[in-house]
Image (cartoon, rainbow, N blue to C red):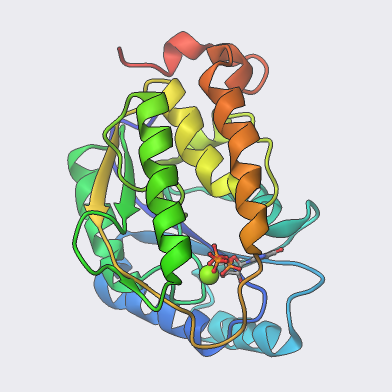
Amino acid sequence: MTNSIFRSASVILPVMDETISLTKTVEIVLRDCSSDIHEFIIAVGDRTLPASMATIEELKQRFPNLITVHHQKLPFAGGAIREAFALARGSHTILLASDLETDPNDTYKLIAEAKKYPEAIVATSRWLQANSFNGYNQIKLFANWIFQKFFSTLYGVTLTDMTFGYRLFPTKLIQAINWEEVRHPFFFETIIKPIRLGIQVIEVPTTWGARIEGESHNSFFRNFEYFPIGFKVRFAQANSLLKPNIDPKKITHN
Ligand SMILES: Nc1nc2c(ncn2[C@@H]2O[C@H](COP(=O)(O)OP(=O)(O)OP(=O)(O)O)[C@@H](O)[C@H]2O)c(=O)[nH]1
Ligand SMILES: [Mg+2]
């Protein structure tokens, strides 16, 4: 149920209040990876700012064959991305933010690994190299480290960053999984469900820098919302993680 060869990537970009950061993200990905990009699916909602919509319009004019805009029906970032997952047509799907907190200069690394390991998920990690967090609150950083250690142990994996939503997935895999979250814990759900299904996850290093425009849409206290899904998925039956009529045996490789 995953893809056995890399053909091309669909890039998903959720947008709320980004303008210049969105444009830069698209430009850098195309500068480095244009022959491997099938499309950008830009997911917007009712709260996406008019300035962002104008930027998206400009990008559509510049790259008419590459940009699709999806207006979300489900709420929040996870809801927007879930709907975009269903639309992706590349063999692989890359999840990026449009606020430059996910560094588009590293996207080529994800694609290079996918060409070698097309059945795997390629995830970026901010914990593989020293000093990868720039401008991150120290208390949040410590809490983040504890969280990563706790859940990597609970899931029996050596992954170092299970919450950063900057990853490449085999498209068939994300279209087979039964997603539940609509807020930020969705970024965590997108790694723990594949882990339970036996999918290999490869990590590549990345750095994180605070956004230069717009604002975070996640409050610190919402971080506690990661725990229910973290425990639930750990002990769930494999077939409950998939959409109806999908056979878990066809997904796992071990
Ligand atoms: N379409 C859409 N995009 C969203 C929504 N909420 C956030 N986004 C986008 O999703 C990306 C990640 O959201 P952020 O608010 O930056 O989340 P974050 O960086 O994980 O949060 P912090 O760790 O608190 O900074 C950004 O590009 C946002 O514009 C939403 O409800 N709808
Ligand atoms: Mg952000």
